[in-house]
Length: 280
Image 1 (cartoon, rainbow, N blue to C red):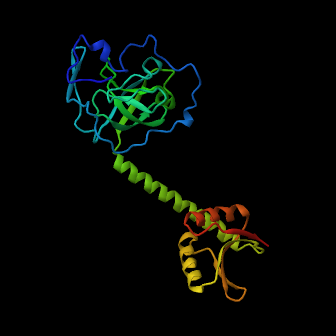
Image 2: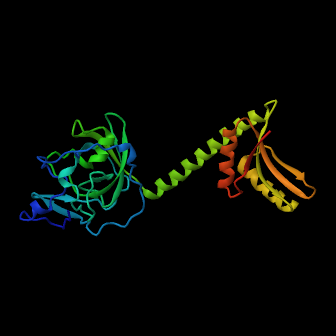
Image 3: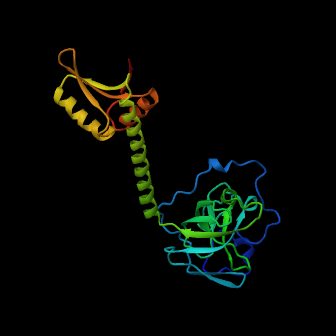
C-alpha cells in the first residue's frame, strides 16, 4: 500500500499496510509449503523507493522514518501476515507475496535488507523490507514478516516471536560471501590435496587423469605450469613423451575414481580441458 507524507482518517482504511492489527481472515495458505526450497533474500544495492517520506501519520500517530539503515540493530517483537494481504501492493509498489522473503517496518528506509534472528530458537532469515507496519499499540512490535519468513523462523504457532533485527550492508555482504566462497574452495583444495597425497603413497596406484597430449613441447610446459596452480604443489603432474614427438600431461595417481573425478571437474572449471580418467 502506498503511503503519502500524511495519511488522513478518511483514507486510512484503504491505505493501511498489510501489517495492520486486522487478523480476522488472515492466516497461512491452504496448502503445504516446503520452506526449505525457498532461499533467503539476497542483499543487493537498490535505489530507494520514491515513497520514503521522512514522516507519515496513521491513526493520529506520526511516525518518523530513518534517513539510513546503517547500524540499525534492534530487539523487539515480530509478527507475520499471510493470505489476507497476498497480492496487495506494498509501500514500494511491489505486490506482497506470502511466499516471498519480505517484511514491513515502520521506520526503516525502503527497501532495506535485514537479518532477523528468532531469539527463542536461534533461527535466522534474511528478508527485504518493502512495506510499512505493523501499526499496533504495542511499541515493542518492530517488524511484520511474510508467512514464509515466519515459518522459517519457527514462529507460526506462537504468532509472534522475540527477535533481533539487524540491517545488512549489501556491499559488505557481497564481499563477505566472496571471502566465504574462497575459503570453502581453499578447504576443499586442501582436503583433496591431502587425499591425493595419501593415494600417491599407496603401493599400487593405478588411476590417473590424462589432461591432454601436445605436439609442441613449449605449449605443454605452459599448460603444465597452469596445472600447478590448479592442482597444488603436492600433486604430481607428469609430462610423458609419446609417439616420438608428442607430450602427454597426466595428473595423479588417485586412490579411487571419485578423487579423480573431483580433480577432473576442478581442471575443467579452470579451462584446461575435460581430461580423461585412465585405469591400469
